[in-house]
Length: 365
Image 1 (cartoon, rainbow, N blue to C red):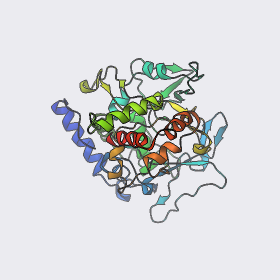
Image 2 (cartoon, rainbow, N blue to C red; image 1 turned 60 degrees about the horizontal axis):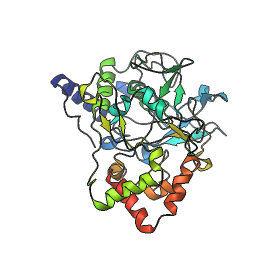
Image 3 (spheres, rainbow, N blue to C red; image 1 turned 120 degrees about the vertical axis):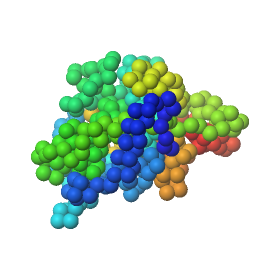
Image 4 (cartoon, rainbow, N blue to C red; image 1 turned 120 degrees about the horizontal axis):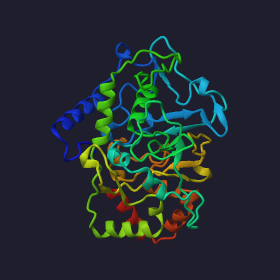
């Protein structure tokens, strides 16, 4: 799953390697700033081999600021730190609070997703379902962090920006995602996220801005997963069936990037099988938790590239959907509701052999 994009310059490759070491090899301790409350001790421990996470590394999110107001954010939200240094008590969820569990996603190909333009994301959205196809994807409009540097062509709506990373697309870019992960997952402060998650006070940075920048560059320039045997008969036939039953309405088979300062990311067509939009997935996937403008049952379409490789980082088996509840690709399909209910029904109506072709296609990604 790991390895850099082709076409990086010498200095870019050196920065990629620095980011690789910081992401995968740096294990934080009390002496280097860990905690005192935390979820994990390193980035790589949640993303083994840059792949999907395991239930052991799943995050618990709670408390939100949205149309229902601010709930429990002064009680440790939005993330539960369930581990602690000696002498401190780990957090416990407040009684009765809605929460959601987020299994860490794979890291590969993120730079391509980062370089999709806001205009293209909005062009795929249809919040009122004006075309009547039952799919009403919408972006998550989020409050930008003070350190966000807007991309050229960024769309702004009442001071809000389009999020595209995270289970509910609540992170604007990879700097936002990385700085928050250091802070909330490991308890490491930076100039970007200076608030200590234990005391709530602003503290001196425990990690350099250069290291954060190196990790962001590493994540941007990790290559995308490569499909295996795309021309094989059952794989190609499975893709055709996948699109015929409507799965491609959300899991878009092709996106393209705009201009990027990293040349190999500029104006590239690629196949992530996502639209980066929120979709209502029905009552079965409603955890009562939300972020930004996302509703509790709304989830960003997860990219499907690398799906067949997921067991390699998940202990030899699948943990799919936002919280890892689905233990197979087919179980994940059958748990689709809401806007995904039509495709699920058409999948169930297929002959067993046709369903197997779709599953073989998905395992090839």
